[in-house]
Amino acid sequence: MKRISLTQYLVEQQREYGLIPGQLRLLIEVVARACKRIAIAVNKGALGDVLGTAGTANVQGEVQKKLDVISNEVLIEANEWGGHLAAMASEEMDSIHVVPNRYPQGEYMLLFDPLDGSSNIDVNVSIGTIFSVLRKIGHGRGVTEEDFLQPGKQQAAAGYCVYGPQTTLVLTVGNGVAMFTLDRETGSWLLTQHETTIPEDTNEFAINMSNMRHWAPPVKRYIGECLAGSEGPRGKDFNMRWVASMVADVHRILTRGGIFIYPADLKDPSKAGRLRLMYEANPMAFLVEQAGGAATTGRSRLMEVTPSQLHQRVPVFLGSREEVAEAVRYHHAHDNAQG
Ligand code: AFP
Image 1 (cartoon, rainbow, N blue to C red):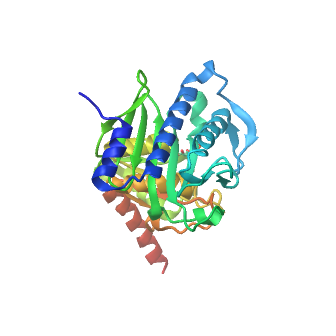
Image 2: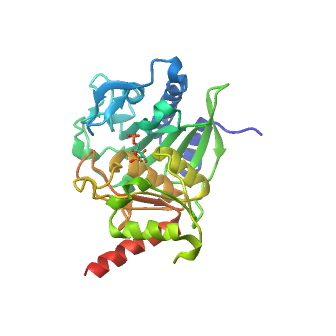
Image 3: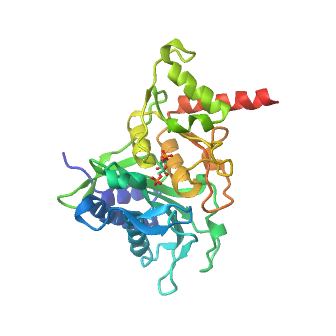
């Protein structure tokens, strides 16, 4: 079966729908090429000097793995010369990276978590790169952090690359979700899933259960009823999965359904959960919605959240639409009971 390449897909999407102007196509191709380079570094494992910690910490105060730093540098170097971008932002960098004056600026801004799931790197469990594309607002070369603070519904594109048994690039430009698998013999990204649809219902939930004592009542009720199974109010049994790599958990949900939950918890009330809005929650929310699923904070649509800080965190409930709606109903019922 002849499969089409990523480039052919992008050209055809532009020809048929006009959704991928030249600079956006270049951006996506450059990011896809950078993901190939990251995949090569990831696959080296102990054979390359890529495992373990880099001896530094990022803006989140988290110890950086060598591959966090390598992946971030690959994405910066790959994207700054092409003339398609005005600036970049990353989980691994305190502030934005404006395209240097020696290069032309473009009309897009790129945000990324260069290597998500870092705690899984050294134990050979799937990890990934997550990216989000916003349109630059305003004219001239002055790009500020405030220009990045756009709600997720304004994304021009979003995607991730999962470095697992297969290396798979998953992409949306607002016209559904396509999946491309890396053919290592030719180095090409080949279209392996043209349209992705998340089943509306599911019996599979993903959450870090060790935080249960810290959850707010609606989350305790929702998960408690999943655990009660067919004898409980839900009247059906549930299964649980938790990879602790958001990319791997979301890829499973895009492929067979499920609900992914990382709630705000009382362990650290100053943080609204663990996941970052701009380069983890928003791109995943765009993909999930484009695949017919839902993505909320537990109370409202994730892609409506107006950001106030580049690295802000947000509670995340995403996946099969009916199951996410159930979790939202529990939050609203709790809030109404509070009066
Ligand atoms: P790391 O990149 O620090 O491993 O964090 C991964 C992540 O941001 C996300 O990919 C996972 O869903 C979540 O954190 C896992 O969090 P727990 O370690 O609390 O399970």
